[in-house]
Amino acid sequence: MRSPAELITDDVAVALACLHAGGLVGIPTETVYGLAADAENPAAVARIFEAKGRPTNHPLIVHISDVSAISGWVDNMSRDAMTLAEACWPGPLTMLLPRGPRVHDSITGGRESVGIRVQSHPLTRDLLDRFGGGLAAPSANRFGRVSPTRATHVVADLGTVLNPSTDVILDGGPCPIGVESTIVDLMGSSPQVLRAGAISADEISRLLDIDVESASGTSRAPGMMLSHYAPLCAIELVKDQAAAEVAIGRLIGAGHRARALDRTSDLVVAARELYGDLRQADIDELDTLVIVMPAAIGIGHALRDRLQKASNARQ
Ligand code: TXA
Ligand code: MG
Image (cartoon, rainbow, N blue to C red; front, side):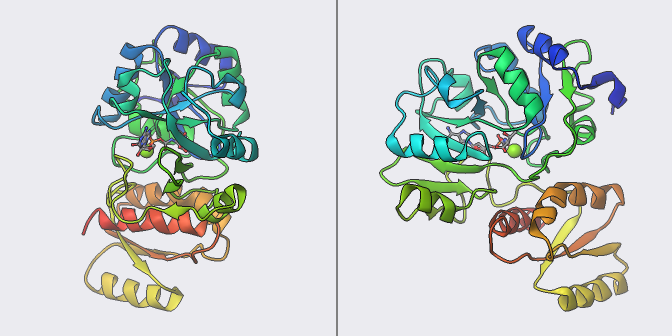
């Protein structure tokens, strides 16, 4: 790992210069940190896949500054897409829409759809406004691992693969939401939520005035396998505090390093801290982190989804 001082900056002008020169920029968003490159520079986009160790057929989200800048990125904004854009952007929603001529094959893995997002973090809004174009930006973690919610997490994951003479991490502090954006697929005859996030399927149903399905099990979005978002330690999910105590007793009795985590009293905090908590478990070299499952309300849906995936990784 490089020293954070070599890569981290809070100067948007420095980040902008990196993008123009074809470099990579770690960007803060309201959900998690992204690893951004000029979406119209295929060599820069190729470096994203390389840095993450991500298969090149897994498509990238394109970030634009505002819905008014969408021309060329999508082929056709349906009425549903306009409704969601007006209600949710800037904010934690990614829409899969028919791709426009500015979208290179390297972004979509040759698909007909593109994931478009207008995020709300002020530093990255400023960067996108000044940049003018689109930024391809997946989460700034190694493939399959836990997303970063602080600039130091990006250094921990990608510090050795980023190059301080061409790349930079823009430090915007801790991400306020902490789990990735909701992904809604608007390509089919009825909208479908492919990834749960802070904007719930219920909220989308209400805005569109129709029943929106949530994809369950193996998702149609590539790269969202059942085991994803995983720390190195095992995750054991339990239903309440009492069950956590029983599990801890059993694990410690068997000689495991184990700890319980119960953030069910405040799900907004639970989401904000989730990836930091998972990372801390690895820093502390736990064998098992026992986590009390949050209720399936509001952002609890997204938390349950990520926890399920993290727990599947070692089964
Ligand atoms: O909150 C977020 O969405 C963060 C921040 C940085 O914007 N980004 C993020 O990107 O989570 P990523 O690449 O880690 O996850 C996006 C998911 C991937 O599973 C990808 O395969 C899927 O969205 N995806 C993107 N474009 C797609 C497309 N055109 N069709 C199907 N799936 C797509
Ligand atoms: Mg990711």
